[in-house]
Image (cartoon, rainbow, N blue to C red):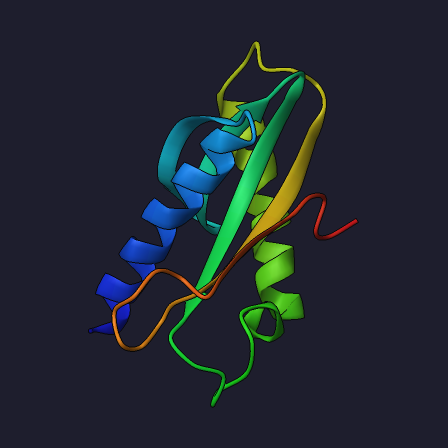
Length: 120
């Protein structure tokens, strides 16, 4: 599976897991000059920006290890851009992280973990 296909599959799996926990997906792959946010959702009175990292193995580290300090800064800048360009949203917001580990043999995911307020 190509890297782009892996990422897209991971985002689909993350959407289902988030929706089961009461998140409502508002937008996918929001892009601006600062970067990209995989998912924008709403959970109760929060706007939630979600970074999804998908891996098929741990030879290059875990999904969590792939979230660099530079990426974290870009996520915050992109989230602030989204908030400023979408008036009327709740004031409360956070950035969540979803780690998806796929089964290389094509079976169900080995792990789908949602980490709330991943940068705080």
